[in-house]
View (cartoon, rainbow, N blue to C red):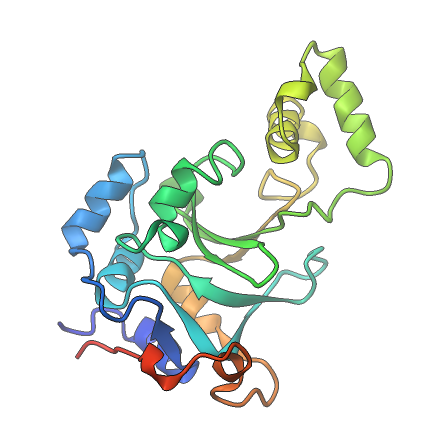
Amino acid sequence: MADDYPEIKAALERLAFYRLEPEATLSAREAAAAEAAAIGFALPDDYAWFCTAHGAGAFDRHAMLPLPPGCALGPEFRLDIVYAIGAADDWNPIALASDTYLDRLPPGLLPIGTDPGGNLLLLGAQDRAGAYAWDHEHRELAEGELDRRIADLRAAGVDVRLLDLDQMLLLWEEMFPGRVANPTGHGNLYRIAGSFTDACAALHAAGQDAIGEVRQNEGCEDSCGRDFPS
């Protein structure tokens, strides 16, 4: 396969990316796009290429993405696992969007990766194109703010007992958009790159992180493998 996106491949090699399912058959590019289209998501071509050329995987090095100044998550996002269409459900963004994160994420965004703490890397398309960090703990909420938003929803006739935290805060943002200070329109969503390719190009290793440290700590043997299509 030709290197359609050399910036992505260079980043994966630089940070010692390895497949989580080295023996699994990779999805075809058209099939990946069709699977995303089935849930109403227009899959960007660079991420479709990644899914079909590499598949879901992780890094031997601590892969870091710079975050916007003032982000509640801190200065950087550690990308631990990159999901891929066609992978097992735990690492498949379509399965995750349709189950674990159903009605919990801002519309038009697909979960394509995670940090070790459960915060997500989201991918947007068309009018929401770009890569975003999503804080699942909602660190943007000041003391007492959650109670105030619950009161707002109850005053509007919403039965908040039927909603989990993410659903409740998404609904509040939809009902009171003028009170959301974050330019993304969601308090816990931070735009970090203009595309998947740009996000990969921005990845860098944390400090002097040694190759192999992560997998040694996890007790993973070299048999995990690293596959880079040529």
